[in-house]
Image (cartoon, rainbow over all chains, first blue to last red):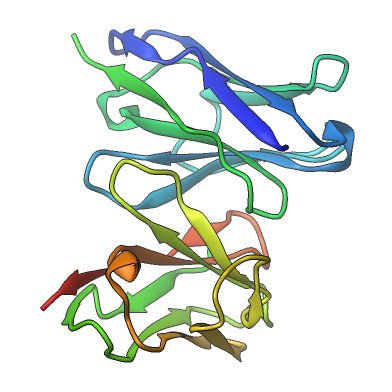
Length: 114
Length: 107
């Protein structure tokens, strides 16, 4: 059974940093791209970032480029999102998504507030 | 960036109704379009990929069509469990972009 379990969310002050992790199981992790999608309360879905199967290519939304870094560790079947210089508008539930868009994690809430 | 525009933003329908949601891309995306259903407090669920292919386990009352810039999602015979918000998404190019969502409510 495919499982994606996010962790690392929480309350952080504006300008602060946070690292989200997603632990994957139930599939050959190295064969899939992995993405982060976020959703602010009452708002729509926003694609944040994607890392390629081998980790060589990364893609970012303009809204997070230069502040967020996606990475993967195929030895641990994890994908991470390092978030720096956080802003109030980064407040959202962050979902980890496997390539193919069928499998989503349950989401982790990031709140940026003083 | 490719903009995805869904219409309507919301609709009210009755059980048994047939509903159609449209999604327009600001430039051609071939058939690289997906549809998702999301219920409150839950992660989105993939319904359709490649514009018209049904994900495994998704009932055939969901039908996707279109290519290029114009796409539709049709739900035949709406049931109580279908009341949700629906999103289209293009995966032709980066950045991936979603439509703003269509909320299907009970009339």
